[in-house]
Image (cartoon, rainbow, N blue to C red; front, side, top):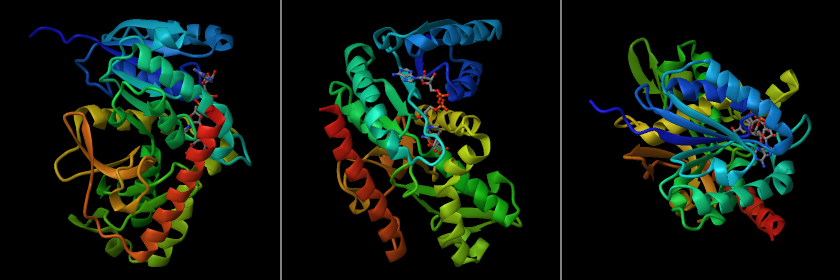
Length: 333
Ligand SMILES: NC(=O)C1=CN([C@@H]2O[C@H](COP(=O)(O)OP(=O)(O)OC[C@H]3O[C@@H](n4cnc5c(N)ncnc54)[C@H](O)[C@@H]3O)[C@@H](O)[C@H]2O)C=CC1
Ligand SMILES: O=C(O)CCC(=O)C(=O)O
């Protein structure tokens, strides 16, 4: 069988901490498959080029069979040229005591510039995952400045929150992580997000049952569980004095893997995507929904029951996203 053509994949912020964890997983074939050759196009800012060069050298030294070329650059027009997929990680991370939206004015301008560059040189089929915070609103701005690329090709990462929710439920039930599925993250990757397990299932004693039934502790599921997931990023910063990197890189790989490979029948994952008004959310914000994916196209799962508790939480996070959108548009003007 003829070898596959290489995919061109860009990682921005490639000299940073998420980049360092992400690149090996990517280069090994965990995202696009172990038979998919890759050309890695790595972007960072000029002062970080010496460090980026070190990362490029390390990737060469791994002697990985899938890697056809590794390019390190500070020029977005070089990094985005003809790419099939982009992990937009490069941005300033928050420090202790900050909310993610405190990064908005500084980071959103990066995504304006990168949207513009993607528009000029990336493939029109490129799939763009925004990781840099505030991720949802950065993705919105990036897409706005890349009008020739379909808006469905942009998404922001809430997979880390989904993974955190799954792990918290598994720990509560004392079951392996693989025995919990269907946790949903609604809304913003921020402390207003709504981690929702009312449609999730857990495998207990060989039988899949609804998580609310398996946990049988509504006070926990509506209280401590939600705040733990919402505030997990801040807890990691407080502990490490640096923001999550290993878990963020793993989640970015999960997200892009599923976007390209699709979701198994009957299963969904959470991604922040353009709202079409589903579940009475405001249209045109990047809101995290449960989605199924087939042939590289995501579809918002429809028809899930939303009770009053969920409604209130879903509206609060939508409101924050609308406010962020206004601030971001003003910052880019
Ligand atoms: N959505 C999510 O779940 C998560 C998002 N994040 C966010 O990811 C971002 C990166 O985090 P880390 O890797 O820990 O930060 P880091 O500070 O270790 O690395 C960021 C890298 O981005 C580079 N950079 C800055 N501006 C750039 C630009 N205009 N173009 C290209 N590169 C640029 C920096 O030079 C640095 O090398 C932060 O905004 C952080 O808040 C982090 C964890 C989870
Ligand atoms: O919390 C942050 O601001 C940085 C990392 C992050 O987004 C997270 O860990 O969820």
